[in-house]
Amino acid sequence: METIQITLPSSKSLSNRWLVMDFLSKNGIKIKNLSTADDTQLIKRLLRQLKLNRRHNYDCQNAGTAARVLTAMLAITPGTHYLTGSERLCQRPMAPLFDALRAIGCQIKCTEKEGFLPVQIEGVTPNNNRVSIDCTMSSQFATALLLAAVKLPTGMAVELKGSVASAPYLAMTLETFTQAGVPWVLKGNPPAYFVDYHIPQCELVSIEKDWSAASFFYTLAAIKDECSLIMPGLSMQSHQGDSAVKAIFEKLGITSTQVGQAVKIEKTKKAVDLLEYDFVNTPDLLPSVAVACAWMEVESKLSGIANTRLKESDRVDAIVTELRKMKVEVTTDGDVMHILPSKIEVTEPVETYGDHRIAMAFAPLKAQFPNIEIINPEVVSKSFPAFFEMLDRALT
Image (cartoon, rainbow, N blue to C red; front, side, top):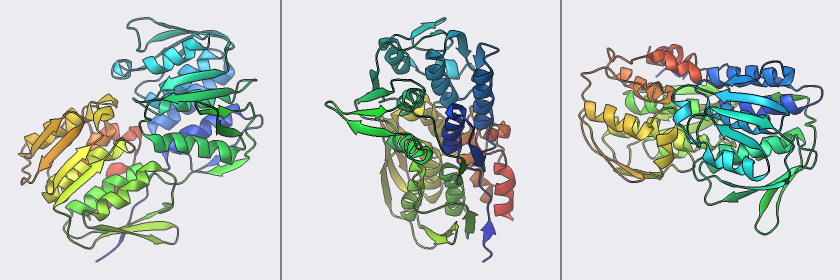
């Protein structure tokens, strides 16, 4: 069986964090392998706009990371700023971040609905260098505050309230600080992350490939009758939280092997009869895992899914709706999705709900249903512009 090489995009999450480090640095940071994803190119343009400080209207389109990071940066940048986004982005909750910034003296006015974009922001110097933030919806709220702290002359201590959703992404932010030479420490009672004012010193960084994007080729490996793929630029030891995909799919019979600077995946064994997994730390993996389990007729209890309702689409509703159209028996109960063994039938186009991950999760079904129609396939450009090119290569 031929092993097919898949070129993945660079990590969008790492790229976005390093663009902020570059923005905060004195002499700039050379970033190799920057992601070409729409989200990354957008945050690059917005940070350049902020650096030039010529226009004060910021449109984050459909990019949640950009909205959260720009909110915190604008709140500590003198001037009157306006921040908005797409209709869907303006439906995604932002209240925890707004409340935290207001608590340290920043002025944020929601111009339509409290707790949501669009907002008018009066940039100020915070009157307190300690803030608490509720991160049960998203760790990006903490990441936004921590990134802003690097710019503050007094630094800032960020205390996290409650459990942290998608905690590995917060760890990624702190690892970026370490690489950039930005001092941080977890200390105090209650404990808080204290970030000291420090201009990032890193001169060159190379962005590794994206494990989140790799997950959709694990789905393909599960669906295709025989499959051997190799993905250069991935490390089994990656700090990316979504590298957990390899352990999940191991239970579905897909083996991952480090081969030099690449990861090779193959279908080598039988899947388990029941898959149980908590996605609270890896919500972006839910679509790819759900579709794979449905095709393989593996009973699945997928928990920790509540926050996936707050993404580019309500992903729980999107997955359930599309699987039911395919005659799959799937139910939800609070924070849990339950998929029962059912034979998939594809008779209708797949709606993508304007969500890149929904499109990429269902597209691997082309391995068994070559004529399946994916509505608005161009949405994949948000994170993986070359996805369908790579999928076609893998299907040859």
